[in-house]
Figure: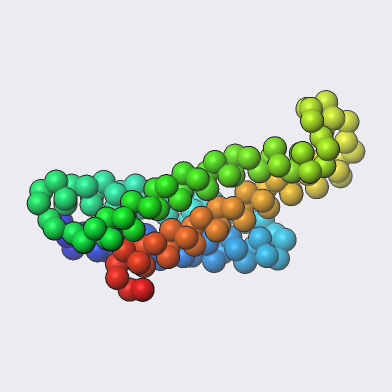
Length: 146
């Protein structure tokens, strides 16, 4: 079971690093990415699986360094905080444009609405790409690679 934990840990790092790099690059260029979201969700699923598997290993008596446990559990918190910040993206963009109601958004011209949606989606992409990169670094730290 420890070998599975190691293999899944490597996958967690690789998938989150790929998601973070792809999302970060697209965010930087001002582009959106459909490929980013499934990659991100796969990375988040690996975080959950690894946490559960690590809990099983601890429950059956495997001794793990405390820092490994800490760096192994922090990605759950990072993912949660990232999702909360992503959920606030629309509100932040609307407030920055002085839009307070749905009626005000609907009153915008089609091009302005599209720009608004793009800005919200780009902000979400940037937040979640950063979260994925942090999760990858925490995974590397948990592995002892850094």
